[in-house]
Length: 128
Image 1 (cartoon, rainbow, N blue to C red):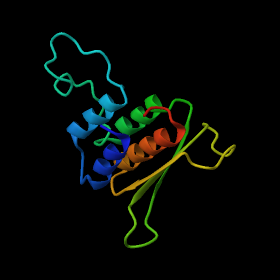
Image 2: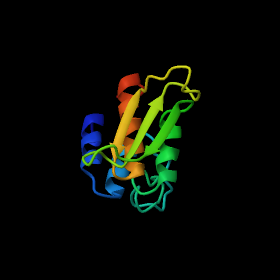
Image 3: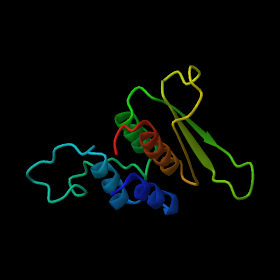
């Protein structure tokens, strides 16, 4: 599945989605080895909860883009704006280069983080 398609699915998402979590992890090849006992990735509980928890989304961001900076924010400036935003930067000290690689917005913070990570991956060419 393409990164554009994953971003579209995330943007349209209304909540946590384990199938989407799995599709993201598989598309980016961030799936650890599964044990002989697991029937599929979801039942083995090895796919992080990218869309269901802030911790899972941050873990995904750190694994997908190590040594990159991230800035999360909450708040609306207008009625039509999303509640959460996330910006991914080239370095942990984002003040060195304040141009974000990827921006994400959504009413759910984990999804805003995931969108920003995928857009940063597109921009940096880290994984296509």
